Image (cartoon, one colour):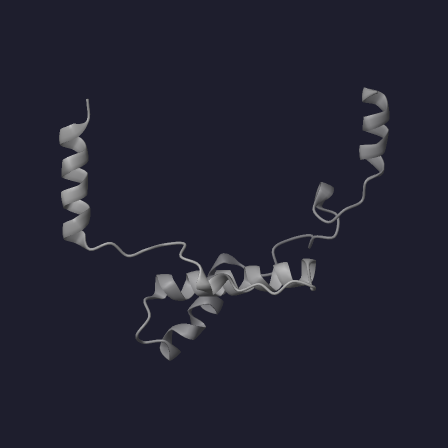
Length: 102
């Protein structure tokens, strides 16, 4: 059975398996990637750069999911992945957790 599985896996050709269908090397250098990410910052003065990057990442992920499953509509921006917590609340909660830890 193990040999049959090995033969089947040797014939599998799917994107990502042994880098099949993926670019040979990085298209952009790290500095070029950083410059591409920061292009949008001047147009979003009310949004922190970290949040801009998170939104761009979610948008790219939505596009990837749309290509994989075009029959389904993806809207990842409506979900909470990170929530801003007031500093005082965090300090109070951590202090309480440390006091109550056995």
